[in-house]
Image (cartoon, rainbow, N blue to C red; front, side):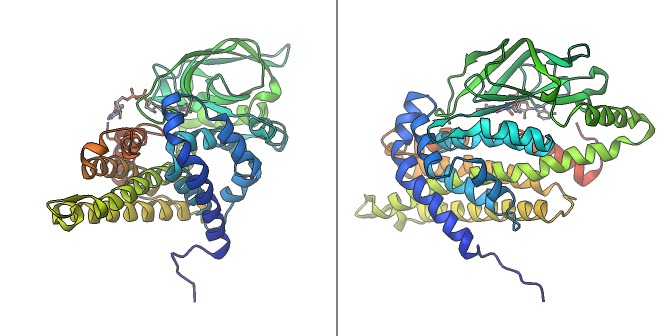
Length: 408
Ligand SMILES: Cc1cc2nc3c(=O)[nH]c(=O)nc-3n(C[C@H](O)[C@H](O)[C@H](O)COP(=O)(O)OP(=O)(O)OC[C@H]3O[C@@H](n4cnc5c(N)ncnc54)[C@H](O)[C@@H]3O)c2cc1C
């Protein structure tokens, strides 16, 4: 009989506890400082590299965990520690996954190690897709990549924005238009090797939350990269473009489905980040409600406070279950017939916003100050409903999937 269980196995529990230890002992105590500094916490990334927590090996192990729970478990614990520092640690993974998913064996072997560097000389990587006029509407991307056949080089021009680690990365992965007639099907991804002339950092954003994570514009001015930097190679690109041109003849549905499946599989990881932040704020609020005395008794003695905590915890657990379900569906090849990946991201990110706001309220005046971490967690939580597809875009995807109607 098939076994059904929500229990992590002993190895997974050991990994979770190990990440939790790092989050509690190294990240938490440093969180307020790096939030104030609004700088990449290089010493902490280095600490993570020293113990193997910031490495390709570790992420590959979690990514290929056959239960699908390796990545959500890792994200929840790291983001429980601190969202800004955690994004500085996992931001490289975004670019690495882009190469793992689309790159050749040789590209994976050449570039991913350079994204991480090593404990003595840590590096980060950036994934650059968004542009000033192409956020939710990826199809209106303008950055162009033109092939110079004589030199077997690609020439890239354009401006990317909101790039996590943009400009400070050793390796940038840049999405660009190779065939403007094909909309988002005419895009391809390129590796921009370290020190390539023409790539520069534009403005660095001063943000509301996750302030330890570096977010900046990336300007590409006549950036030339060898043909070998096109992810997947020219032959595969030409085949893909030819298939996309077949779209009018009805062959496009398969392509669209493949892209959707990729998003459905990656969105639960963002949901897990949100669960980590929500859980962190809930724990602080529970602890505070038990100890803070007003009217001669702990404030948790009031149903008005206790019921809020009950709702917070219920939502967090529901969010985690949705994230785990979607992660399990992705790893076991289940079709996302109701956009369960998008559902998990939508619910978990809205949960983080709501729960952190409730935590601020439960801490009263203290919740509003930087003396207590819930103020920072509340600011941090606002990102989850924005990046990797806003809540409105998740609803659009879910509604379209359920109805089959191209709702706008
Ligand atoms: C801190 C941070 C880090 C980021 N990191 C990266 C990164 O590493 N790499 C990268 O490529 N990008 C990154 N992003 C970009 C992020 O993915 C985009 O901000 C996001 O996709 C939204 O795009 P936008 O900001 O242009 O908003 P817009 O698309 O302009 O949306 C504005 C508002 O309109 C709503 N809206 C838009 N279209 C519709 C519609 N059809 N129906 C209903 N509502 C709609 C949106 O939901 C939103 O509320 C990051 C962003 C931030 C803030």
